Structures are given as C-alpha cells and as structure tokens.
Length: 286
Image 1: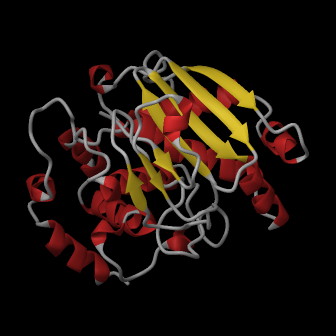
Image 2: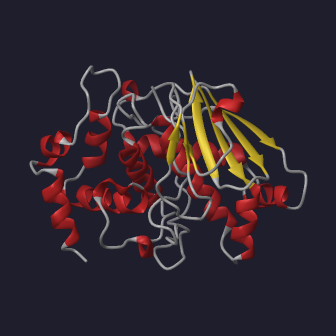
C-alpha cells in the first residue's frame, strides 16, 4: 500500500486510481482534513500542513533554500520518467515553465535527493517508473497518488498565481511541493497511510525542510505530536537532531511488508524514549 496526499478536492479516484483521498482546506498551511475512501494509494495534505496560517515558503522568515541538490546515489532507482501535462493554457499556466525551465532535470534531482534522505540501500526503494506531473487551474494546492509503479503529482496553477501575487518565489514553492510529494511517492506508511497520516505528513515536512523549502518561522509551540503538518514535521526534525538517522529508522519501521502493525512503540525502539516523553522534551525547547 502507499499514499496519496491532497490539499484539495480533485479526487484521485476520478483519475482511475484506487487511491484514498484526504481533502484539506485550500488555505496555505492548512492542517487536518477528512478522509474519504481507501485503497492502494494514499492522500495527504500538500507540501503544507500544520495550523492554519502557517507559512511554508522558504525565505519567508526562516532559512533560505541552500540551492538545488542533485545526488547521483540512487539515480537508477529514483529517476522516474517524467510525463508533464500543462492543462492551463492561460497566464497562470505559464508560471511553471517560467520558474522551472528544465523540469526533467529538476524532478530527477529532487526525487534522487528524497531517496538519498530516506534510504541507505537501493533494495529498500520501491520502484517508481513514471511520474505524471499535471498542472491545472483549480481551487487547491497539490496532491499525489500512486498506482502500481506509476505516480502522479497534481499541482494548482491558481495556487502558484497566489504565491506570485504575494511576491513569493514561485520556483521555491514548486520545488517545495515537489519535495513533499516526492517524499510521499517513495516513503513507507505501513500499508495504512490513512491511519498514519500524521507520520506521513511529518516525514514529508522533514524532507522538505532538509532541502530548505520550509521556513523555520513555521515552527511553533503547542499542539499535539499527532497533528501532522509542520507540528509533527518540526518535532521529527528535533528528534533527528537528537538521534541521528531517526527519520531513516522511522521510515524503515513503517515497511508495509514486514507483517508488523506499526505503533508508536517505534519511537521507544529507535530512541529509548516514548513518544510522549520525547514530545514533552521538545516542548521545553520553546
């Protein structure tokens, strides 16, 4: 099983997949959501997440992107063939090609980098042969789903226009979305992304942040470790700083083929501390 993540209402099922779809608020950084359906693919909120009003765009009050990374490790496993469809023939549809003039290289570098963060061995990586990137004018942000070895990222050109109108970096926003959903395409979810959505979102935000596309200003006290989005993402960032390779071990613990139902006992197994104790310690850092 795997997951699809969505920040709005374009149902993956309408694309002929058996995906489950999470629908969330179209507001940037919106968290939470309601689940509808179940199936092979999963859906979770876009590269956003966290409390309403959180900002995720890099450079919006936190660290700036460190510059594009393009590791060669896992190039054979994590360079899916790109199929790009721009369904927006209007002005908003031009925002993507203006920001990302070489989408093949950009996507290849991002998916390789995602795998470089999440994995240690090629044998750990599930095959992803084709990545369909669909740009469309709709009221949302983005979503992703996978069927077999094919994955799809659906991105809103209307959202890109909102970023441009707010004087944000459209390129950074696109790269951040691709990092988040690139993570969703490859990460493990124990075969039950719907139930473990907070973990899925937290790992996605961790990887997006590692590339410089989540602002440190989005880190806030309070909430619950299971809130998902930025709340869980920054919690995971902190844990990984205390226990190097935490994210790698967490992702490995979520293998859908190990015949073990995932529980938060994984936090104790990896760090020696329960998730509640880790959360309490993290909250003291504010």
